[in-house]
Image (cartoon, rainbow over all chains, first blue to last red; front, side, top):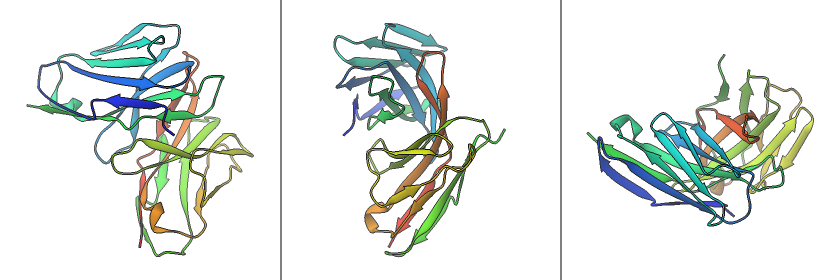
Length: 112
Length: 115
């Protein structure tokens, strides 16, 4: 079973606009991560946010975490065509698990 | 550093055949994992290892075997291929990042088709 579920499943925007993707999960976590996957490639780690953090920034990326709602959001500001990819959230199962559980992803298309 | 390498990139098997997917990493990471990704799905964990000589099952282990004789290598064996194992397979190595979570580094994947 998958811990994280991303929303929306697909998102199409124009270059320069902001893109927001959401992730909901079911059980308590120690941390949540976001990954990007370009078509035909492996996943690339973007950012990790701990359960005691509410917001984290990395360049044009902003991640928020609301543990009371068991949800996270990834905001990409001033999007570029190169941001076109699928984005996945991943959670540990809490309790120090060495296993990450991935959601099904949001497919983002940024039109030039 | 090459990071995580996987071979082969593409493979076609007939039902019942066996094969080994190779995975190697040169980052001296203790943790390694195998995932499969099916269309429209996220990654599902097949097997993982927390160090040489130690392996454990993930979410979908049936039909697959792993071993970890060295830190660098983590091969995945398909015992008797079935069409349901048609998928893209990703190997990852990982370490505990500053936030206390396992940050994973992925290989480029092996696209497997079972006829």
